[in-house]
Length: 163
Image 1 (cartoon, helix red, strand yellow):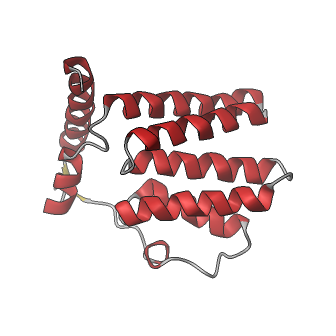
Image 2 (spheres, rainbow, N blue to C red):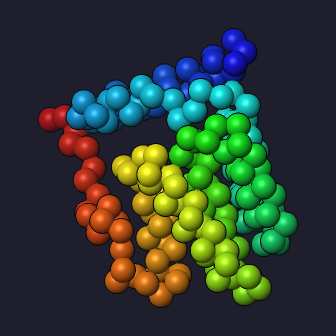
């Protein structure tokens, strides 16, 4: 990883810590450790994730399938660079869900691909809020809202704020 890439990842971690400090949020030891751990050590994978997010956001401007497919391909490339990159798996799942929701063709197979990506992310980090949210969306879209994973069935607990 280049020095520039390490600086970018460190900057992101510093910003997250400053936001938490500014909100006066009390975090558990595990939550603090999560903030200090980068989602990836690969600057190349992180850059690909940013590109995939840009494609994903472009869908909301164009309402075309192509940006979603570009987001899927780019997130997949990020996963190839870092097979433990939870954020890339989550975005991949989100892009498949959005395509399944808005384009009937291959809808069922796209939901299956979304679930597969989300479940891989949950194996890597069962506490990922983004992944749990997308998995809940998959179940809802697939008509399985009553069949949930254990983490989806638990209420989300927001950190306590300091008095």
